Length: 58
Image 1 (cartoon, helix red, strand yellow):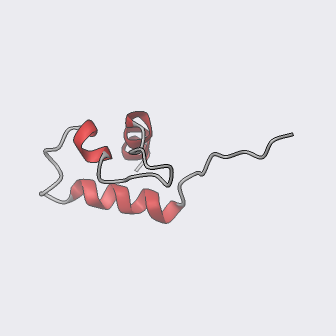
Image 2 (cartoon, helix red, strand yellow):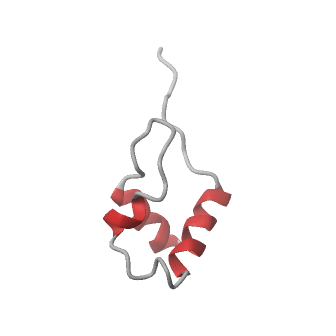
Image 3 (cartoon, one colour):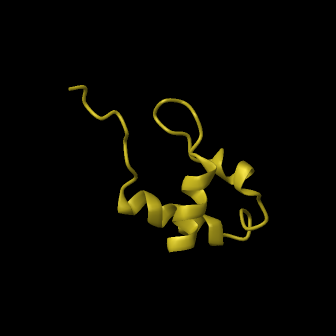
């Protein structure tokens, strides 16, 4: 069986995302613009759905 290559976000990363979104400099950004601030290890930005899930729960 192949190992799972998905890397989940830590609680600290989720918290940092919520705090950054509350900053007035980033509050007016669209999710597409905001997700570019968080590149994943594979070089792609975080998924839009991931951003919305984090902010919905946070």
